[in-house]
Image 1 (cartoon, rainbow, N blue to C red):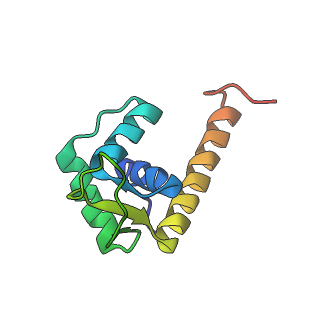
Image 2 (image 1 turned 90 degrees about the vertical axis):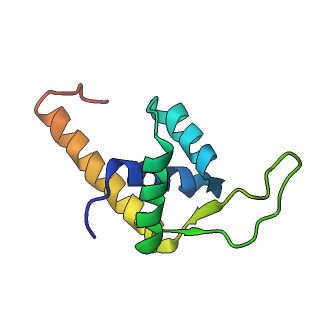
Length: 108
C-alpha cells in the first residue's frame, strides 16, 4: 500500500472513531491538529479514499434531533483501517528515528 497523504490519514483517523459527515470531519481535524481543512480539499480526499475502498458513504443513517438529513456520512472500511494502521506504524518509526538523532527528546 502506498503512503497516505496527510489529509487522507487525518480523515481516516476521524472515521476510525465513528461515522462522520464532512463538516464533522473538518471540526475533528481542527480540534486534534489545529489545522484548517478547506472543504474542497476534504471532499477531493474523501473521493480518493472512496475510490480506493478505504472509506465509504453510509447509505442510510438514523438522524438525531437537529441533524440535517441531507448530510452525507462516511465510514472507514476494513481496508481503510488497515491502511491507517500501517501509516500510523510508519509515522511511529519516523518518530523513533527522530528521537535517535536527538530531534525529539527520548521518552522514558
